[in-house]
Length: 194
Image 1: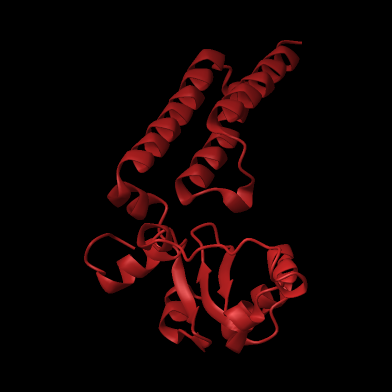
Image 2: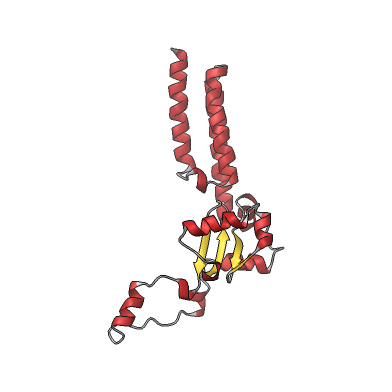
């Protein structure tokens, strides 16, 4: 009966600690998060084997505390984020595949094509920029001619005199490009770890 009680306590402890750690799926976890979650899974089973419930709960709590501290440091310091989580890597730029980046990521062109097909992209020529994100997922920006038509575009076409013209973005708004940080790293590779 003692094993049942300890199992229930450890499951509840694991659920509580994972709620504290956050709600990311495995595909969204950083390397540090994945290692800690696997370690917690191993730790949770130990009290049933070794009958050391409090020691196990303390160790699991320390793992989660370390994870929370690491994530806090990543928010404050770009260099720590670059070291622990990594940065996105540009694998296609202006329709051209970057073979060196693919090799560094141990990713074949066929695998890249699979990622692109899953996003509905059928041609490299349609891609302005494509990245492999730190969580392994694909990010991309299409060239203007390949972007889908928006409701605003349709209104401009159908009713050009009725639709308010949106002014050109100011220089500071232009800098809010999602690929800005990646491009800065590429232009100054010694600034942070990749």
